[in-house]
Length: 51
Image (cartoon, rainbow, N blue to C red; front, side, top):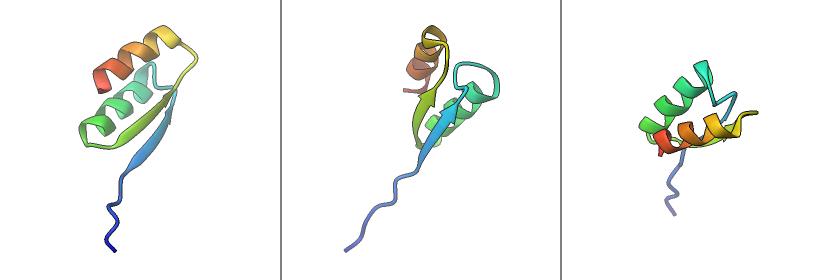
């Protein structure tokens, strides 16, 4: 059998700064990202941009 390897990342602090930049870069590279943050409003806008 041949199993496809899917890359995934968990990004903390994803609502600003380095976390946002990392989330967007990973998403652009085709990596599935899980985003974690204390600010729901900011996080939602990052999630939309990464999608």
